Image (tube, rainbow, N blue to C red; front, side, top):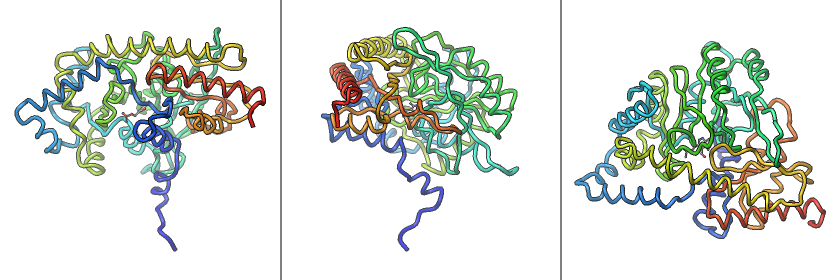
Length: 426
Ligand SMILES: Cc1ncc(COP(=O)(O)O)c(C=O)c1O
């Protein structure tokens, strides 16, 4: 018999949407630069932000043995104590929270934070049975889908679709479905990304307040994935307030600020959770990467990270979102049956193509042949009991890349769809 993998091992090592996405993305950014990259969630290279990283690296190199300490030492598993203190102070002064370093734990990116959190809270329980993570608004972030060490980790509630003028739509939380799921199943935690990846939706303060209340009532945590949110990187274009409370687990990341290569995420939660996260870091990786923490350390203390988010990053993505909507409308002019989710944050267009003669997984393959990389919507619909035809009609398009590339790629997508609909393609 050949080499066999364990059941959990096979589950984690299986081909998955996130593996395809990251593989496509990584190739486009390294060995296949001709690919028009509207695929994975790489942030933009904003010159003013890149200049800050360069200046910080120069400072670190000039500062005594700071570089050697950063490269040559392990941090404690919870994170660098100076970073934890500075981040807590920064959030407290910006948002009036009362966090201490005991409420924080660093992870190797937000992705790892979710792997730890989901498997910490859900799965096989000591009292018997399995508990699950409730996703109140599906489609939800592709990266969660395959993170369970055990099977069947998610219960999802399909979003309600509100059609809007000008080829736009918006998803809303179906609270009747959420409450029914909380009643019917053993739910370990509620989880949302805000802004939502893949759609650019931002759950309103009212929706968050309702979810928070439900979580409290059921005695479970509400996990809010703040990868694109406030106060940094601040890719949020509506009036949404950041929230934290004892029963809320908030995750932050340095990736969408422009530092995905440093793999730095942070979990903000009650100490019992952050202690567990630190313990899991020690088991899986000993410690975290130091570089991201060292790069942003003084920017937390002097508030520069908040200024950059407010004055540079948010305006950049907001303006780009407006332009991308314009290019999309231009490209699809004259065609019916297309619409796009209202973009309230993040850096994605969530394009809906009704009445396509093929699935978006097939369309993704065709577009790849034309050197346009997108993410097919199917991967974002998981945890659902019933098949939902809507899952075959959406594409996620990252508009953070160079303007000419994004515009050209949107033109090719519209051209391919036009040809498919008119039957002029094989
Ligand atoms: C919603 C969301 N959460 C978490 C992550 C994980 O990012 P990272 O591990 O780079 O922090 C991403 C990355 O795209 C994301 O979009």
